[in-house]
Length: 253
Ligand code: NDP
Ligand code: 8X3
Image (tube, rainbow, N blue to C red; front, side):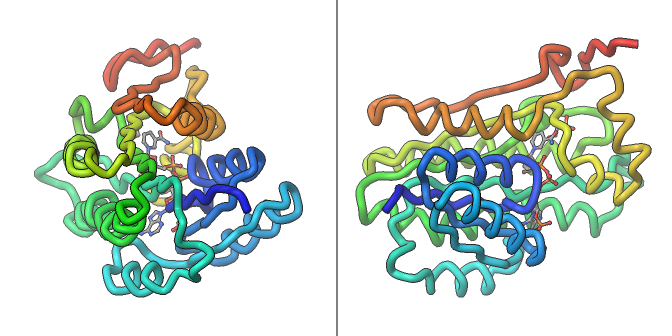
């Protein structure tokens, strides 16, 4: 039986690439997300391509009872989770604070902050009782620097940064590593979700930029997880070479 990794938001982007990477490296994987068809597709792909054991859990991280119910009834053979990747998250909308849609704000806060906490509260005790584990929190460069129209998304990712520091301290005595990863521009479904399905607007975000890929982030998570047990990378900002900060991109024409 391999080590177990649990990844939230594994139906696309970073989460899916991370599931594929760790399964290829011999881990058993718990994949989660809301889109059941995509979970089933990935479950089949993982099982066929790697021989990893796979557990697919369909739930919405915003729903506290759903998260607690699903994760408190994990089958016994899936409880020994070595790595949790708190990845599920999103940006919705890009507006000034005086015109932003409050429903968008609540979606971001509920997913990026509260959802991450609900999942952590369910899984961290399993790691504590075992005296080992590694939690990855996927923040963003947007949590390090604010940008125009980023307001609530930036704030949720600052919260992820701050929570990662607190978790590291709280779990220090339990031999649990906590790694915060703050990516810059990466081409996934992220911008499509932010612009509510507007493919043209989403695509234009990456024009002239050799953006990060989901595989880049999966490889970085694997690298951090594979370091010797006495080494913990606490905080990592990762950008495309053409991006030096949220407001500093060099686009090729
Ligand atoms: P994607 O949109 O490709 O993936 C997001 C994943 O999150 C999906 O699998 C989605 O699954 C899941 N998700 C969203 N909302 C919920 C929910 N309420 N409950 C459960 N799962 C949910 O984007 P990325 O892979 O790019 O994003 C992953 C993380 O990386 C996010 O936290 C994002 O903020 C962060 N990030 C992204 C960057 C980028 O430029 N792409 C840069 C910096 C950080 P489903 O829809 O099936 O529920
Ligand atoms: C995603 C990166 O710069 O679009 O977190 O906010 S950015």
